[in-house]
Image (cartoon, rainbow, N blue to C red; front, side, top):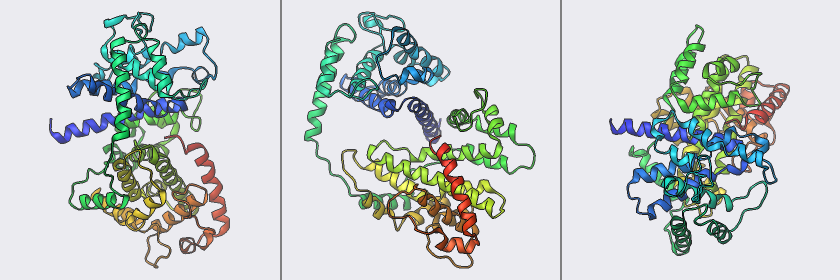
Length: 487
């Protein structure tokens, strides 16, 4: 297997894992970020146990990410219950490791991870579940995961109690040594937690400034050294199918089914309250039937792009989420503006709305990846660092990705205040959609909203009257109210 093919498979696998984690987090707000914390702690702790073989550490890491997947099938009224669970409710919850194993059993790449996930609630004295395994019969990865999962749960807020501090959490774990937890592993975990805390106090990092990080990205990009985000091949194939004049449903399904990540998310979105019908959707084909071909195409584009907005740096998550909601609002606004002007190809306007800020997305993500989580940042510094360069950088990205000229111009010209008579109509629509999204509260940085949309040069050149614009606004508000958090 070539290095490029191996990298593509790894990227696909990580996208699939991230998709599954997103599904978990949608089930319960208290799970948000928990899987990543558990996975990181599992990996860090495992390294101190002389598990030098990276493959073993990776498996424990993935077990940490996916251990709670079975909770997706648990009733919401039990998962979100603010009080202690009754015995019959706990009996239901105890099924979640089995559900997780079943969901993941078809992924051969995870065959060595499944035992860790299935048995992470076993107890060292045999009183755990689902199989009542005892002592060394419990896989070592499951014993590690049991300790780490409990620690993260104790130090996190839950519906029935506040978060506990590290010292109190460790005391609770030690009370279960030899009964619930492997005593030797627990003792070493306590040492790891305490030493990690001491190291954190002594650690002094030389951190680059935001402008320096941006300069590095631009320099590496010019030299072709940046690993650019790649939109899945399925998006391009969907575009080709949609250009055909004949019925596209079956061909559309075949293309989407090639990408497990997008397939899972599409089915999940089709089952959301916004689109839900009388029956549960279980396949891409039935999802297309419910959504329609045009809406399916737009959702595939949105799902594929949403992955670009993910960041592990918690300081940047809110900013990236605002950027995503802004782009999505622009996409819906652009579609409605094009329809108000009786233009065809509304799906192209949706895509233009989604990608018009691609330069900002990639640059902000690069900053978030390079900036230590503990380093405090000011949004003003981020805005100032990318303000004058994101459009040109975005245009360069579109050229690298070989998109048509009108898409490049949308990316490079959307934020202009005035336009010449030769400006593309697509640019004017993107400009109005951009300001409309800001006006509705989906701004990225405060202070960028315009007071009066009718004063925009784009509005005047498009020939739109205030009545038409006023009709578009509530339509975008309504769709964002429902669709804003589907992805």
